[in-house]
Amino acid sequence: MMVHCAGCERPILDRFLLNVLDRAWHIKCIQCCECKCNLTEKCFSHEGKLYCKNEFPPLKTRCVLSSGESYKAKNTVVSATKRH
Image 1 (cartoon, helix red, strand yellow):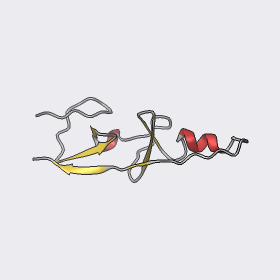
Image 2 (image 1 turned 90 degrees about the vertical axis):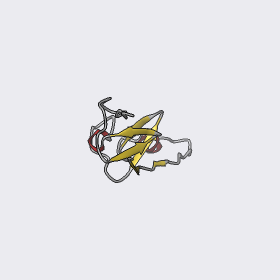
Image 3 (image 1 turned 90 degrees about the horizontal axis):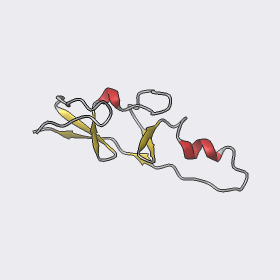
């Protein structure tokens, strides 16, 4: 079975699959949707998109809120699954 990358839609031929948001990715395709930096250690998700900490919308919004509301950021775990 050929697995396709959620970022570039090309086949993943690597030995390991990287799963983020229940989708498979090439390591080079896991990047922030805003600034395009590679997300190698930690990434955040919001509305199905990947972000770095600096671009994560709830964290950016927290700085300008005057209502005292706070948001909790959810880390998206990046896991490697060995291919058979």
